[in-house]
Length: 182
Image (cartoon, rainbow, N blue to C red):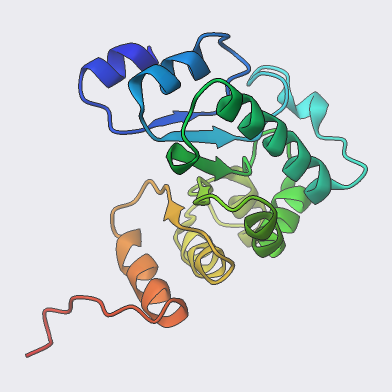
């Protein structure tokens, strides 16, 4: 599927298994010289909730991601093509997801690659807010993620871009386009 996507023009591959579901994935990424998101997860979508027991969540996530990164590098993936995703919601419960957010700066420091987060509209936000609508949780987490070093946020709602642009301009001191500017 990844190869079909690349051949159809995909500009990046976001691999929720970090190369563990398909032996050929990392070889394909190296061959095609395309940006590659290595996400942390354990197990499969069918059984990952059984694998959310950690002695030290942040340390283990970082070490497991480092192993996947080292494998990708050893197979010829260029370091500038590697992005990291700590896997919010993948083999992690609500408290663990929050711990990941609190420690994104630690993860970024230990893994000096662009940090991508895909947290938008996840169930843990509904559990915390008690609301089905996740817009407020999504916006709050966008601000935290950017402040803590995230480079890319994968969201489901295009309106989130305004929250993201605002947080980016505050925390990274970037100028943003405003239709109100003259």
